[in-house]
Image 1 (cartoon, rainbow, N blue to C red):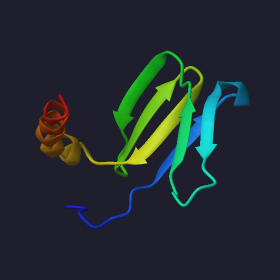
Image 2 (tube, helix red, strand yellow):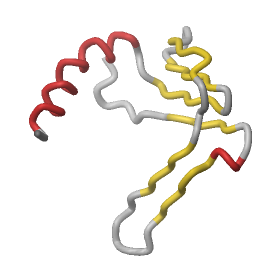
Image 3 (cartoon, rainbow, N blue to C red):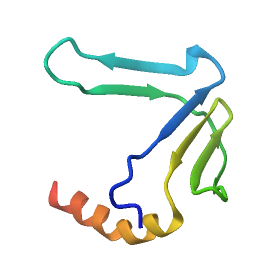
Length: 85
């Protein structure tokens, strides 16, 4: 299990026109927001090295996340979403 592992992600867009928003605040918060358009879903799969790859017509999102982590945390995510109602 990867409990203490830092997660790595990459976003590759075909054009900077597909980058919708990048926000880095000047205040004391270290928060950063990246928003873009991946386009129509072409496919999504877990690669053999533990990378979830979501491929759209306009870009690709990759994150190191295993299949076992998705299934084990899905119930927790539903629970959190229901608590915000």
